[in-house]
Length: 263
Image (cartoon, rainbow, N blue to C red; front, side, top):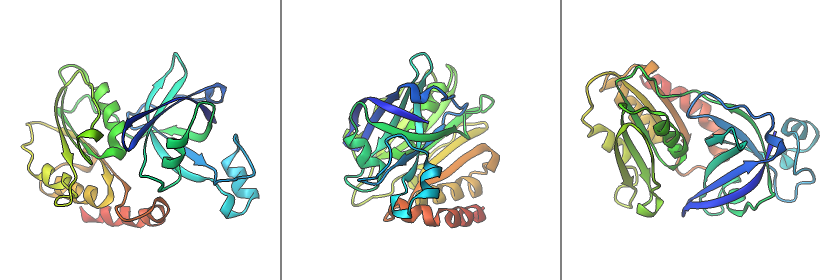
């Protein structure tokens, strides 16, 4: 499956929106979750294949250095009527594979992908919702807020690098939203902000995704000090500070196993 870039938009200094369409998405079927994601495949520079290709076939027939980089991106929006897929991609300068590709993308460029899959949607039976994360979790949190009905309640804490990195968020629900800004003095403000929260009464359904060490600390706090049940929390470390995407992917399984053993 693949999509053709229809248009792009620089949402913030570090967030690029890609809107994809074309007949390569004819088989795309929306997932139920608000954290739906696709696995994209980015060929290395100068690849002797593409732009449309089968990632599995490439792995079977070409040397490792020619394999595409695989990255997972949350579906920000799927417009069924227009058959348009929107992805918001975090860009950190020239680092990584997908970020630089997204920043350089132009109409007509092709993005190969598989999916979508999903694992979370706000539980309508919950009394309130806790949504925590950073730029990497922003598309899922934005989609989740839009899915909440009038009368719903959400507490949201989002981390970014400054006011220019904030984006408008919409919801019919009652939302307590606070943006937290990283600084040299406080590079990881999210765990402390969560510990300082006064929780509303009732059962909470939580979505906790972002930087690995911060997410691990928050998960431990929610389970051991706030008494959340594992079943009432979607939790995933998307990336890890000081690690490249490839280095993180190599150790993520072990990190998650250690995190699960915390509580």
